[in-house]
Structures are given as structure tokens and as C-alpha cells.
Image (cartoon, rainbow, N blue to C red; front, side, top):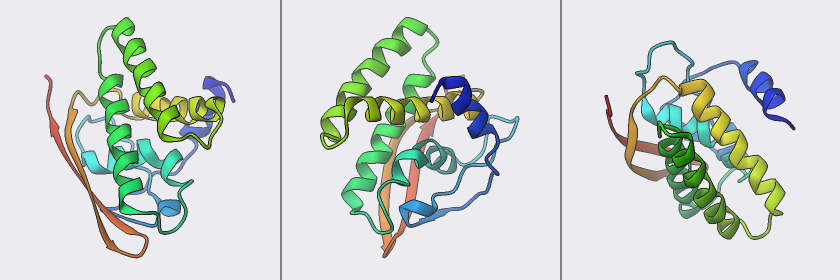
Length: 154
């Protein structure tokens, strides 16, 4: 699927908000607003949703933590002002994801990362914050709470 097709598909999603995740398959999309503010955890959930939706109803907490840490790295790389720096960072993240997901073909990992990058930039490109820390806590079966510490760069 090309970038434009992904962007069009993503723009048709209905936004919802949630403070916790009830299973990976039901991750909520963060609210799209013109303002750069809003709960960073909701924005990160939206960026990570293409990956978390593949983990099933009750994935291990360690898997969810890994996904959100990589998604936060994608978020931060998408905030870099220099296209060359962004490209270099995305290359490093891609290598990390291929190593983290050895059961997926490299092309599938590339597609997953591309979708997450499109979400971070297209939905939240006006948010200047970077993510300093992410924590994931299992509340009960399939229910995770995501906490994010962010820093305003402007």
C-alpha cells in the first residue's frame, strides 16, 4: 500500500479517546485536533495501534512495553527538523524493528513502520513535544495503562 493510500485510509478513521487500553485489538485512536496539546499517551497509542492490534487480546506486558518504547522512538524521530537526520533515525529504528520481529518478513516490518511514521507525522505533526519516558502497566487481562512523560521542545 502506498503512502498516499495509507494517508487516505488513516484520515477516514473515526477518532476516539481512552485513558487505558482494553486489549491490544481495541487500542483507541487519539483525538485529532488542530491544537498540539492533548494527552501524549493517547497520541502514542494512536501511533502504535497498527502494531498493538496485531498482538491479540492479552499480550504480555513486556511485548506492550517494547512496542510503546519503539513507537516513542518513532515519534521522537518524526520531530527531527532535518530530513537527513529523520531518515538516518528511521533507518536505525527499522533495523531495531527487524531484529525485534524476526518472524515477520522485512517488507512487513517496513510497512508497519511506515504506517506508524505516517500516523505520527500526519496526525500529530504540529505537536512539538518529544517523549522522555514511557511505562506500561497491566491492569487486568487485556487492559494496559500507558503513561508518557514528554518534554516541550519549543
